[in-house]
Length: 115
Length: 110
Image (cartoon, rainbow over all chains, first blue to last red; front, side):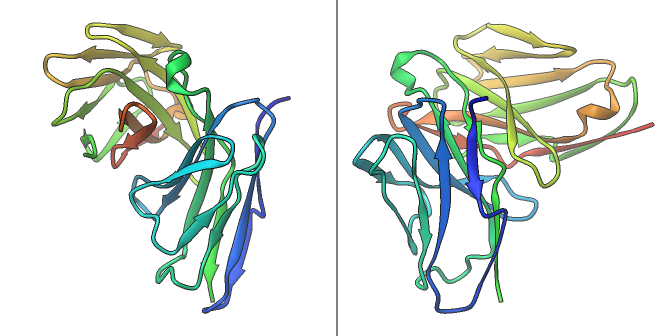
């Protein structure tokens, strides 16, 4: 079955460390997204990519970095510059909007905690 | 600009109806609706593409009023499985990304 796989499900980070969250999809979607969700709040966009080797900053990109070397993979690195990284991170993918109206498919998320 | 959802939370008894609204200060060309169970990923429910469009999914339906720049999600004869947080999402920046509302938490009690 096609879908999005995020790993790990839970991640603990010490202050000052960089960590990388994995996101892999086998849906053949061109567009991929990273969102951050804080308790009781909505989804805020960190980075997005419409095509391989290209990506754009979202609303809260500071302290994060991404790469898009392969169509199926869009890893997110949370750097030590991110002051408050504890949150639930969601990866999503979709067919680009220009090809019709399609919803986003989300991964099961990674819960990051700074210890 | 983030769409605004109302109400922020709803508590119902099983079998009752609910309406969740999503409003935008900008022109809307489409609206997405998602449901998220606690600790899980959001699940796509439906997308409305043009003004006046209505869609249904089980006993969950939605309408889109382009002139009023708003969409409403209707849940009829609610079931326990409908519990969760509902998000609307609207396209931004040339429709390359979705901006989500803050969510409406729906609790269904037996």
